[in-house]
Image (cartoon, rainbow, N blue to C red; front, side):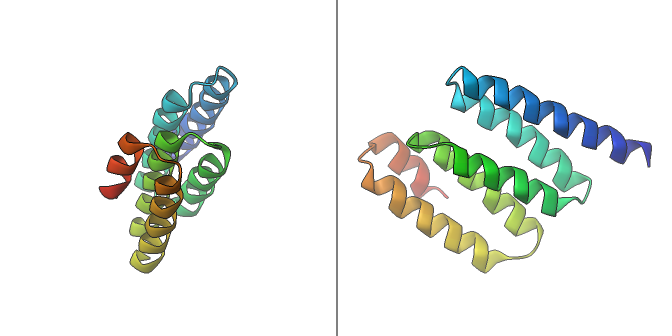
Amino acid sequence: WHEKEGIEEASVMCQETADLFKTEANLSEACAVIGMAVGALIYANDVEKALQIAGALKSSVGTDASAEVKATRLVMDCHFALGEVDKALAVATEAKASIDKRGSPEASAEAAGM
């Protein structure tokens, strides 16, 4: 029981830290911190909350294609944990199309690996 409470507290701290990185326009670090929170929540079997956090990150990355790839992977991890392979594929396909339109070869290469 205490482990779950600790993971929830860590998740909140990760979200607060990610918000600080976002204000500094450091989306790469924000994605990394949210990734820790999502991983911990999946471990604690709170996948729905992890999906909410990952989805919020994906919605907030704006035009940063690299951050969108990272956020999409987090959303996909949640869908895989829930056994929703078809939703993970749909998210990946939609994100890849969006990223390819931006003309960033690096991000497109990253997206190809999703």
